[in-house]
Image 1 (cartoon, rainbow, N blue to C red):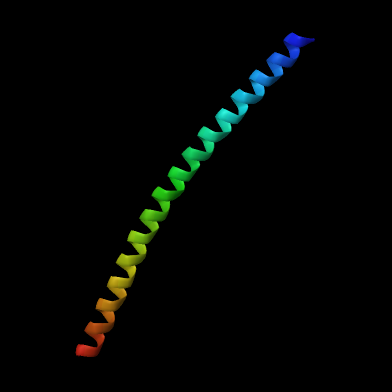
Image 2 (cartoon, rainbow, N blue to C red; image 1 turned 90 degrees about the horizontal axis):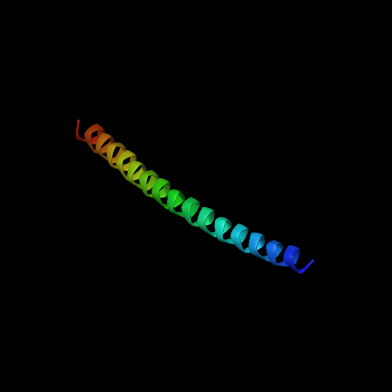
Length: 58
């Protein structure tokens, strides 16, 4: 019975560690995607602003 309890504790610890690593991976991926989104948004805003200025100039 004690062996089973130790095994359970070990498996639970391993699961928590795996969940922590997965959370870190997902957080990193989210940060990368968010950074790309911000770059694209800035590019779209720049093109829109440039188009507006060109329209006013003529």
